[in-house]
Structures are given as structure tokens and as C-alpha cells.
Image (cartoon, rainbow, N blue to C red; front, side, top):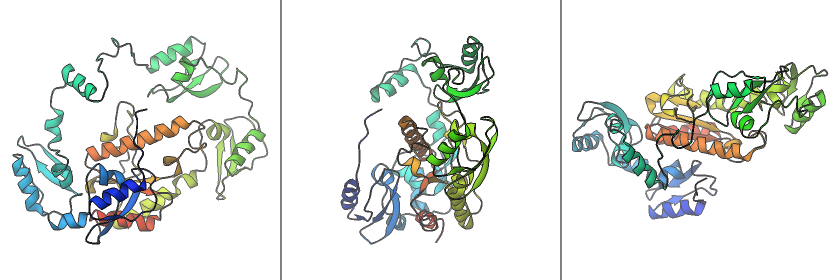
Length: 389
């Protein structure tokens, strides 16, 4: 992994002091966790460390008093374009812009003024050549080797997975391939089915765990798994991994699920899983109306995530998204990360990528953490963005 600078609450204090203000928070978790700030004029607001340090934002109340729509129109004129919006609310909410070639798009004032962004259509139409790619790679201390076949990096496909299973007298039952580490569904010659990554089958030489004698599931195994998760398995009879068992979580919720889902897929209480997210959605709906049904917008599609990353709550018309963050986004938890610390690292990478993609596409991403009161935090975020009084 690339070297990452570890910041602390004292770095937040220094940045606030450089602005003649204060950071009122006592604890720092990571750059995406909201902190409380106060400017020299006594205005208070919530913002994460990343937005203050890297995006160079500060008190929106002070900045808003100096800005109006005429400033945005002057800025657009200096770029041979136009600002088509009629009203200016604050520097974080989207305005409508048009470039010299007639392309139209939305972006907030900060994005255009402080971060130097302009027309995304014109920017994306620059032809990518090998020389440009090599310069980009060099600037990141890397190397562009262009053709993956010439470089010896041949992409693995579902067809290769099926051929590999066939060579072992089995089958690959999956219909979609994402990457080396994503689980596929396999079946051996005896009809056993299990999930394993392409990497595990190809590089680690594993095959059917049932035939290998690695799996001996019983009702006792189910009860032990439930106990490890502070719950219970209430069933008195076990048939096989595909038959439903009755489970109870630490909060008393009851549900049916096969042992395969619990043990292999890492599932647990469906009620607890969605409880906080549903509450946050209910709260924000009272202020802004129902969020979009689109949870996986096109701009969250990448090479490693062809099905797109997902947003918990999304309001494209306001340029706003809200993520409800549980403990698994903050620290390694054996259950959530399936006993592999690398899964926690991957989760952090996904969270950071999602943050960056939202920023690039003029979507303000706000977080509601598991230790915060959503009845307080959500209105604070909305006030900060000027969406409510």
C-alpha cells in the first residue's frame, strides 16, 4: 500500500489556528469523520478534516456574505463561458454553467473558483495518447506499460474460470466475473457447491472444501456461530447448509436463514443491518422529500467496480449524498470483515474512492457515524449546506 500520512486532532487545531479559528472537537478518527469548527467571527459548523485541509474550505457563513450570483457570472465570463443560474445560495450547492462550446453542467462555486475546474466535456475530450499516459504514470512514481498482454497482465474472465473448473470435472456456476478477489460459485463432480475467489482456486490450488474434509457442519456449529455473534440459533434440527434455521440476534430479532448464508456469506440479522440507515432516510425525507431510487449512479462505475459503488442516501437534485457509517468503516471487526484484515483495508479504499468520485462529480458527501445522533447531525449537515434554515 502507498504510504499514508497519519493525522491527529493536533493537526486540526493547527489548521484552525492558521485561520484564526478553533477546532472544537476533542477526538480525531480519520479524515472523513466530521469535526466541529469555529471561525474568528464565532460561526460554528461541522466538516470533515479532508474538506478543510485538502479542499481548502472554511466558514461557509463568512464566505457566503461576500458572494452573490454576480461573482459567479464574472468568474464564468473570465473563462469565456456563462453562469446560467439566477440565484446563489452558498458556495457548496450546484450552479448551472455553460462553456464556450455550449456544453452545460452543474458544479458548486468552490469547485470552479478554488479547485480550478471547468467544463467536464471539454476536459474528457482531450485525446489520450501513450505519451500522456506515461507522463501521468511518471507523475505518480509509476510506469505505463500500455498493452496488458504485452505487459504480461492478461485479464482473467469468466470463461477462464469455467475452463479451470471443467479441468477438475466441476463447474463454475457464476454468470458474472468482477475481479480476482470476488467470490464465484463453484460445483465439484459430486455436486457440492461453495463460494471461493478466482485467486483462491487458481493461485492457492484449493478446490472443493467438502471433498477435502474441511467442512463438517452440524447444529452445534450453527449454535457456536450464533454465540460468537452474541445471538442464538433456536432450531433443534439440522438438515444441511441450505435448509433454514431459526436465529435470534442480541436485539431479540428473529429470522430464518440457512447456515450457508450465515457461515459462508457472512450474513446476520437483516433487521439490525438496515435499522440505522432506514432511520436516517426517514429523518432526511422530512426535510428534503424522498431520496432518489438510484443508489448506484453512473459516476461510481470504475474498472474494479463495474456494477458501481453504492450510496446510502442520494439527492442528485441537491448535489448531496449521505453515507451511514457503522463501526466496520472505522476499525477492523472480525465478523464484518470475515476474519481477514485485508477486507478492512479494501473497505477503507472503497470509502475513499467513493469520496473522491463524489467530489469529482460535484456531489457533497456527508457522513452519519454510528456514534452520532442522526436527529442532530442530519439537520446540521443540511443547515451547513443551506438546504434548510
